[in-house]
Image: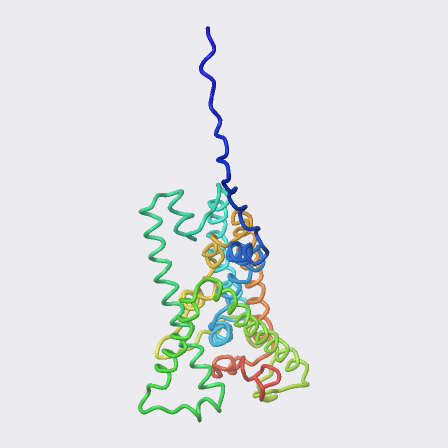
Length: 327
């Protein structure tokens, strides 16, 4: 065949200036573009383990666990802790199986469940998870306000409102502050979380140190020598409280909120560097860590303090923490 017509190449117009080169990508412009993606990508420890640890540890550890130990004994309370931990452990295994079955993107539990079971199931579980988290937040805030008023005389004497609105208004103020932090975005939540978690972990160290010093007889805090009686709470000793007699099942229901919060890591699936690896490892590690902590608290307080002290003194954790006047 004959060759086709020759192609015409564009020739530059005489006197025309070439287009200016694109501006170089400076360090500042690169940071502006990639700042969010670079800063918000989290690993297993900071992105999953610490959020789960912060959400699992709650007010029941400070206000109710020692009382439950006085009712069910160290053996019974250990059984309660292990039963609740097994429940969340099986849930975490299911979550891990789903999370490792492909790529996990932003959307938290809704994305993980809806991708495998459909959007209808994912939406239903997401709504229940939202309602449960909201109710749990209200419980934690009310517990924190109770500790502020009952544990700190300065707060009780400074804030005094007409009637019985002290707790309610203080709880609303704290809830508004938390809402402001959450509304600011995930980055602000991640910045504030280490502060709150540090306070919780520091208080746990002080209460464990206090009960050990109290057991050795070198420190009493807000208690007395009469409150020390070793191995007085080994067996269950259910007593009446608030007009009802408690049993193993009711105490199990009371303690169960202390093991929830394992979905905190999957909530950050969109900002995790490797969600398929971080969610299973961080969630299971947080469950093992908190379960161990609960068992240590149960056996230390149950083996050192007298039965009546655990039942009658609701704030025994604060009384025994070292040093009591500062805490």
